[in-house]
Image 1: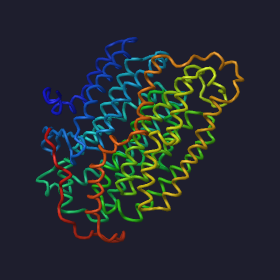
Image 2: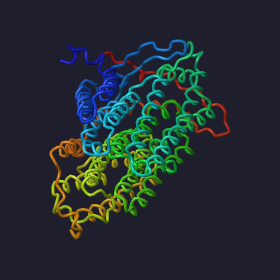
Image 3: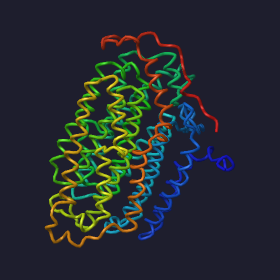
Image 4: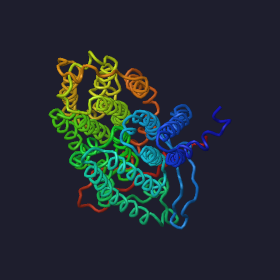
Length: 534
């Protein structure tokens, strides 16, 4: 059926530009109607993207559904898009969460006003994120990377809390500074490899190919690794670049917090996988750099867990847990093993579902009580049993209870890390205990302590709309926890090929930082750039 309608030839373009159409339709829809227009556009986007689950061939390496159209030919810039096993699941996560988030924001935005502008920003944000995951041209990638910053800035700055301007500016300055360094690195690569690629080109495949023929000197790799890594580390965020995140989460409206935690944080980890490892293999595998990244990952897991445990604000507590979860992603990536990389992917997907659901739940509680202070609640399980059930399931998935998505991802990330750095894995495993330490007391205080406050006695349980928002995310948490095989099948070829490529192109002997040139490059191998015609 999909071949009959030429699905493979147009779906990626549709997924990038359809939200833009929805953005303009939403702007002209007017108050009261804008939210419905935005929801239907976001839902159609998800329904169109869903067949990627079956159309994408998990047995093949390389990019699939690729297309390339000349754009700014004088600069070697083309509109190049494609997907592989790393990006396809992140695209599906994005298109699923957008309609869920829009539907979950109906009541909140109705009270705050400016509906058309808010929902237009949400759809523009979806275009930016989906574009980042599909771009196979470095200029196009950077363009989408910058586009997504603008709507998130306005979502926080206009519809956020009392300190929204401070949080929005801090978010923008952190991410813009990292982006500037990444742009410098991109331009350096384009100019350096212009001769080998037959002229200026921003093409991902062409630059990778040129690197195989003429590898970067080790010193160049270290500097460029630092430029790209800082941009991605801020977005993850890694300690000590995480301080913008709690402020952004606390001040952002619920829909902004959901997209920020569930989708935008994944862009940094995606950058590690798509650029840092294949572009700079000698730097990415150098013991000193790997050790530094692993230590920062451990700090993200342990330090932020302890900070989260003492937070009186439930939303700020969950914001810090995002840093802890992404610490497992960093460990899995820099373990440089197939199991570690697959674990990192599953943690990203699991975190998107569980933390996105947790922010939605806290937003629904705020709509009922207009407070996020944990001490203001107590005994809500007797008043809102369905709400409590979903909350507990989400909390257990966040902790990593066996049978939920969190367990699968963290187990694989720790397993992959143990193969290369067993001591690091043992220390990181304590993060599972710390997760229970900060999450279970919050659940206890909100839901199972005595119902001793009159304000909590008549709170309504989940409505049908709220159940429709939450149940898809609960389904994903359970599905990934009970039967993760389909997710692992789709990521395995891509991450296996990535590990093999990094190992083959890294220097056989770890160079010293004083060395200017790497060891001789291995035989050229560009199988990973194969284009699968569909």
